Length: 201
Image (cartoon, rainbow, N blue to C red; front, side, top):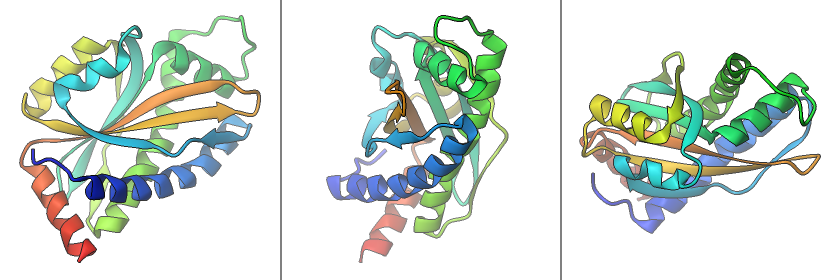
C-alpha cells in the first residue's frame, strides 16, 4: 500500500472530523448526555500493527462492517473492553460499580458503531465523490491478536489500515477511547489516493 503523505492524512483528518461532528449529535441523543470529541488522530499502519495500539489492554470489543461500492474494504470500531463497558453503562443508564451483561455491552456497541462508522464513511464517500456503503455490522470481541489474525485472513497480510483514534469525554468527565479503522486490501488504496489527488488539484 503506498504511503499516504502528511497532506493526504491532514485532508482525511478534516473529512473524518466532519463525520465525527455529525455523529456527536446522534450519539449524545442516544446516550442522553452530552459527548465531547477531541480532534481525531489519523495515521496509516500495517494491519498487523493494530494490536500495538492495545498494549496492556488486549481484551477488546467492537464491530466491523464491509465497505462495498466503488471501493472494497472494511470499517472497524474497536474499544478496550473497559472503555466498551463504560460506554455501554452510560447507554444503559447503569450506575458505576454495578455489573453489566456481556450481551448488553455487545448490543450497545452495535448501535454506537452504526453511528460512528456510518458517519465517518459517509463523510469520506461524499468528499471523494464515491459510492461507498456498508454492510450490517459483525461483532469482534476477545483478544486483539486473534481479531488481527482474522482480518489478515480476510484481507491479506499486506493490507493496511487508516486508523483514527477517537477520544470522548462525557459531561461527568468519564473518558473513553476507541479506534476506528478503515481497512483496505493493497490494491484499493490506489483508488482513494487517485481521488484525493484529483480533488486537491
